[in-house]
Image (cartoon, rainbow, N blue to C red):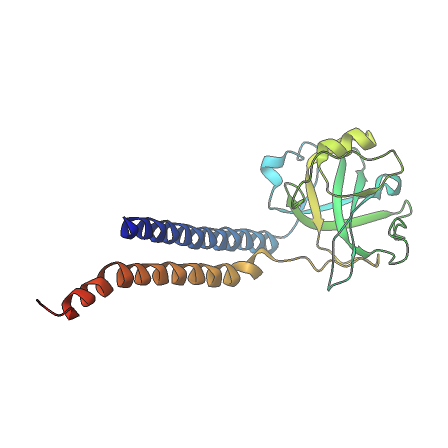
Length: 241
């Protein structure tokens, strides 16, 4: 009975560690594919946003160029975003495009927060002038762990824990495209756009997969030794009557 319990526990650990290793490899493949798609989009160059081209199916993963004016009054700041160990915000701003009744949500970059007053908003370059922005079209902004429901306190509450298009549309009253443009073009606005490349984590995932497979091999070896070889050796070494 003891051997059966130990064997079942070992088998469960082997299955779990192999599954974790497989998951890490799948994540590595997904990130490699995402990076390849981004590189392909960058090589193809940006396309222009024109009337009728705002559907998400045709633009996700593409490089896009837009010309418009930032709406500073409805710019929001995604909290708890660090850069090189410094606390700050990701700045997400609506851009009004001439001839369109919808706004493009631009993930403009990172700005540090005030260490003495975290409710103080960074000063941004916007000011009603026209900007030409290039970036990568993404379906949304990763939010991490979502801890319950949240709604902004009011129209002046512009520090948010996450961005979701439906919440933003209800708060701002603006019609937004169903995607976000992560800005990649460098403009003189003081924001940091040191975005993480999906391909940067591929080797780490593969190393984790190798680690999990090593654990599975270790559990299999221990199971074989203590469950089969060690008892057999003890029986073989036992003195005969």
